[in-house]
Image (cartoon, rainbow, N blue to C red):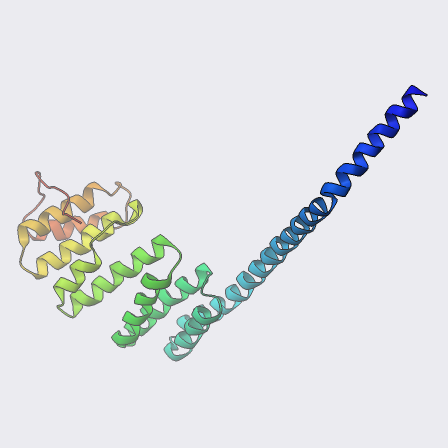
Length: 219
C-alpha cells in the first residue's frame, strides 16, 4: 500500500510538472523538429545546387575547349547569377576571364576577375584573381594598379607567385634592385620541384643574378 501511495505521489508530481511545463516542452520539441527538417532541406538544397552548378561548369569548360568565348561568358554569368554561393561560380569567372583575355576583351576579363575578388567565397580563388588582374594592369602599363592588386595578405601557397609578379612590375618600372629582391624572395619560397622556380631564376639572372642579401618585398 505504501508503494501505491508513493507511486500515486510520483504520478501527481509528474502531472503537475506536465501541466506547468508541458506546453513549453512541446514547443521545444516542435522547434527542434522544425530545425532538423530545415537543416535536412538545406543540405538537400545545397547538394542540388552543387549538382546543377557542376553540370553548367562542365558545359562552360566544353565552350572553353571550343574557344567559343560568347558561350563561355554566358555560362559564367549564369553560374554567377544562379549559383553564386558555390565554388563553381568563382571557378567559372576565372575561366571566363582567361577566355576573354585570349579574345582580347580586356574589359570583360577584368570584370570577371573583379567579381571573384568582390564576391568569391574562396581565398585562393580571390588571390588568383588579384594576381591575374595585376598581370593585365602590367600589360596596360598601369604599374601602380598592378602593385595595388599585389598588396595585402595572400595564402601561403600563392605568395611566391605574388612576389614573382611583383618582380615583373618592378622590372617594368626599371626598379632593378627591388625586382631582384622580389625574384629572390619568390625563389626562396619555392621548393626545388616547383615548376616555376627555373623560370623565376632565369628572370633573376637576366637582371644581374641572385640577390644574396634579398629581403621580402613589403606587401
